[in-house]
Amino acid sequence: MSTPAKITLGASVAFCCATVWGVHYLQTYEKELLRKGLEKEQERRDKKEQQRINMLELEEQRALHEALLKTQKVSSLPSNEPAEESN
Image (tube, rainbow, N blue to C red; front, side, top):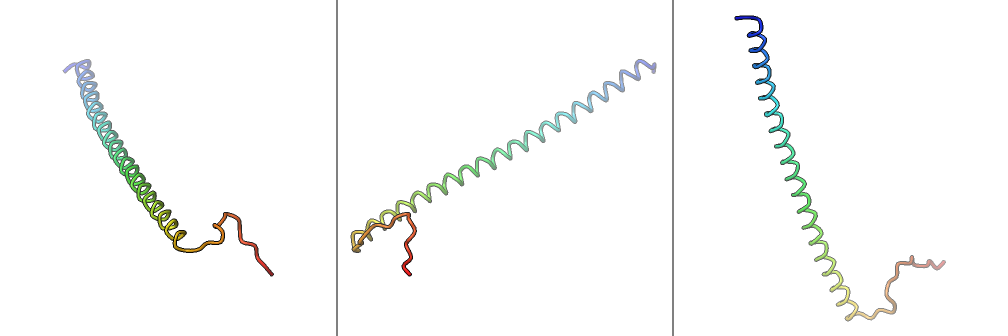
């Protein structure tokens, strides 16, 4: 076999190996991106569900607060200001 034929064969084999490796690398990379995307989607769903649960709890607390205000006598509603200490 002549030298140019050997060079051509070697270059063809090298190109083929590089192509196979490149495709494998891209498939692995895309699979990792897909997995990360699924994890982000699950986190988003979990946060949305937690927010829904929090809103339900808030509504329950508001309803309980209103019910307690109706059944108990309150001289003044609580404020955000700290209570004054009397010495």
